[in-house]
Image: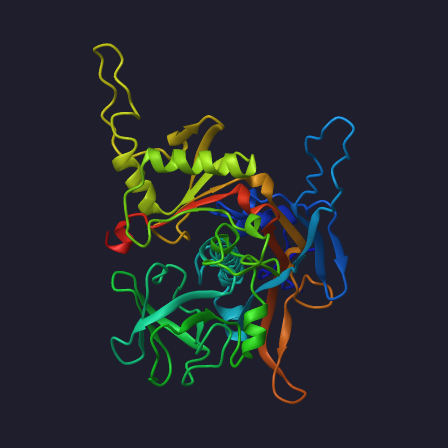
Length: 434
């Protein structure tokens, strides 16, 4: 069903079991593998490949105290809404020219088992990383950063908090005039040639153009995608699902600011833009407030490396290795992620470190309030039989002396109980210079 290719007689492929492909895709990922493969109760697939499921935001509450002989409470209906959820397409591709196939594909001429093995394995690894960064690092609108300035020719400086965390060399990027808007001054389908992490600067290919401050930056597959298409094809992001209307206005098509829609917001602890250090007090307040409002018990804290550093600095010193009698503990420093744990009356919260998390934020999540829908598990779509490499079309009725293959997954994830999660914002973080 799924296959890679290698240099063997009379064939361009070697079939790998599905589990091997998924192992390569999910290598070093922390968020996606934990999502439950199921849809919420009552979900139904409708026309247009959309999935509808109920959003009971307010129960009927047909209860009251009555006097002896009095009327029973006036019956009311619960306030039912409807979520709409759509799977999206993730895709990866690679090609290999005839000369490379026949000359540079052996173990002698290339490394890691030959070029024919290395290229698809790279695609699978990059494919999983792109999905993970989409799920964890974005709001869900596909935007991976905003322009801060133009430091030089063919350069863009990207604003914090995203910085260049979600952008990598060789991505095709596009600058738009607004979210899902028109292309800005022909800056479209430009290859990112260089990423300066320290200064948050990307260098793009082609002619030098004129960017504009606050323009959104997208990663795109091809040139000149229409704005409406660009705005509608993106998977959900953790920063939008666990947040409020300041993060994402529409949650599964429902307006978070609408009357009676407060349960569409997660519990948000910000500080008016004034950064402060993470503390046990903040974590306790977030745990208490989430339990009070939702009766849920978040089980995991998701954060970037900067918040792990701050937690060790301000919450965990002298407590990780308590002294026993007069004996000293070992002299190791640093931390083991699995040993970090925040305990509340509702249980212990484990820590997840994700380098795709934007700095200055910690999210507490309840995994049973998430769902994951996979309409098509990741597999190679290389031709009619879905296993072989095929010649790529050229001009007219010709073919190129080149083979290609495509990796595809149709999936998405979401939450049907956003108030069961919390986010702590405005935290000091070295990646923000605080």
